[in-house]
Amino acid sequence: MKIHDKESYEEIIWDMVEDRMELSEETKQAIKDYEKDVKAGNWDNFTGHEDLKKELGINV
Image (cartoon, rainbow, N blue to C red):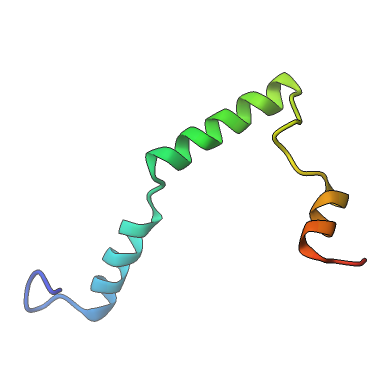
């Protein structure tokens, strides 16, 4: 995966990590949609704490 002989393994790893850090277009659109819902006060697409605890089986 080296581009040139003097490239360190650390540089290769950082290049790989940076490639994965970019959000997909689908994820970016989902974030925008949720932001619109929050600003509009539409909470139908969100799970409340109690429902989430039930769904995850958490008894706190």
